[in-house]
View (tube, rainbow, N blue to C red):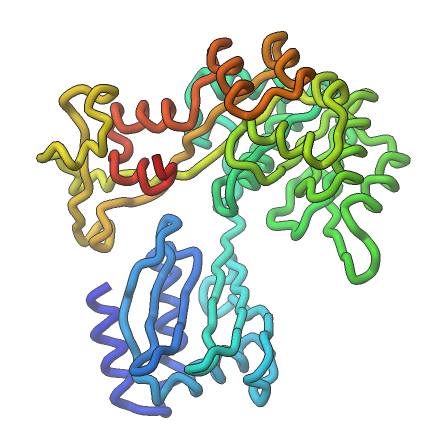
Length: 399
């Protein structure tokens, strides 16, 4: 990171003649650091350069505000955007051949009072090539989820905020289904967008401008003799209704829906207007996910003060690890991420709580009484094993 800063300074001194090399340096620097996004945000005095590393924005450097229009113009040229339009948002893609070829570089610009800000999203399809056993789930969750994926029918729902690993889990689940099936199965998906091509799956990307919504695509796919159906996201009652009906009529359905917890998914679907009896009959399980950063193995240290335990002393005992920061982790103290999850299976107590339209807290109590491990409990286990820190768990779960 220090080398990147010093080289940026050298290119700044060259003025506009060094813009092309400066932009290349930013993109290559983001790729080397393993960033998922490169942010260029103009301020009143300078342009902030930040990388999103392991889900968290990190300040990298600043560039002279006078060069900002030229930097944005260069990004627009690379992504085939209109350089003369600075008053409207634009989106494009950069040919990644010169940067390695295997990544997808998506550029988004947006006008602000100090000039256009830009974000380069770095998508590496290889990051989606995990198998179910490589995701980092506990053995119990991995075994249970594998059993659910072998069933011929039912609805499996994933929930969590954007960037919590839901899509990666779905692709891993699809590979598991393909590899564990004794005979070929007709597997179809409707996504927004298709982020990774999976051999053996007929994948479709929705196009709302042309009228191809999730609901319309699913209605047509039901006439295509599907066995396994993946729905990118349940956003409305029509899509939810089709998913539940499919899960009841001999299809295995996997989808995502936004909710705070696994139990919150049922509250969300009930609020949409799905009947309780339909939920209890169709839904097999709900998996809630978050991603926490892994402590850098090169520099992690034992927690030194009571404050570092973040109020979890009773659950953790006397031992926990904290972040320090070193060149290996670019000074962040963390390197890589791992999931924390809660898996809620449909059982009789949970079924009765849903049928009586119990609130989320009552439903959560019924699930925990039946052995459901919460996100917090799974996170505490990750701390005990030295994978992450109490501070990181608090950042993610805000407890």
